[in-house]
Image (cartoon, rainbow, N blue to C red; front, side, top):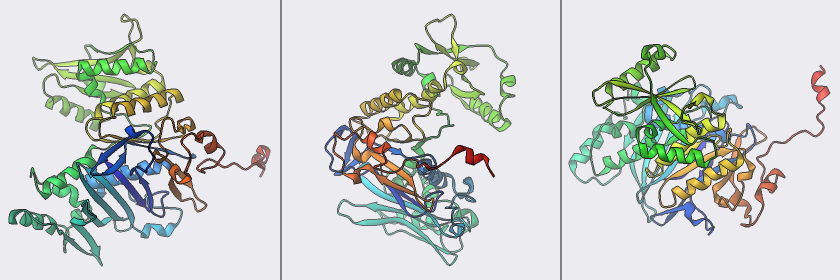
Length: 457
């Protein structure tokens, strides 16, 4: 689980800014907390703020650093990712640090990158003991173009030491250009199959990052294919669509004869080739889902190895006249992206949603959050979301320490802070106080503005 994340010199974040999921001493909504090794960790965080305040950049910062961790610097755009308001900030490093809890063990993992040289300057993975001791599982530094990587762990045996020395050697002294852009975490995790010891720990940390789910307003959650594969999940999905009052009684898949090559002509060539490979490699009855425009298709091999094409159809009460995905409202389409999240709740996942309220009625967004808290009551899952919906600022729904604000400063940098610092009572109507400007992070308008003046030269 995520305990905290900090970032500096990335987009609108100039100075170090931190969001924390370490629970305070607040006693309400105890079901919103997981206790691990005497640490109380929050299961959610909602981030509020004005347009262009920097809320989305907090999600972007996690997405950006995760891409570097998993795929290396070559997979991200470094050119305009620093704090661009001050042009010399491209010379300053970008810093990203995570504190996570896996099982009963706390880790600190961080990255420092150079925007100008396009390399990783520093990387570390620290194991934190319950008594406050810290052990570097690995630490990497670049000083005057010389790279050095080391570990200070107590090895279980000499074989483990030799392996670590071998892995870290590639990141030391005459390091290749490829190694300058990749992380030690991913390099070791993808090269070892150890089931125990330090390499199992490294892989576990890597897999946590790989499991993070991030949804942007334009992204489509690919977990829907799991729903299409399982009748129980389809029933659950149908029940939720009905619960959220979308008018959909059930989600169905109808087999149709199609000219598959003709369908693939309507999507980018590389994507079409990937779909063909996925189908070729798919096990019998394992579904593959893809979209063409706004239409969703589900296909699988039957027991004879023949490809069966299924089209997602929606029952609005008349099985003789089913609806296509394209017939649905933007809000219903948004639910198609969000509902599969509930299947991730048992995996210890971190789920980030930028603009959770996009195209959704305020009551529906609230019900979605209430349902999330109910489902994860006894599970280790976290939801972090940005929103403009001030109606969610309700201490009957959220704890004070689950509410965060991002505000644009005079120098155009973003500041992150928690409602908890205002020491509000549990019965305070914080939505009204927020709109009145008590907490900041709202748009400020010029009362002297005259529209006619905008047309004048």
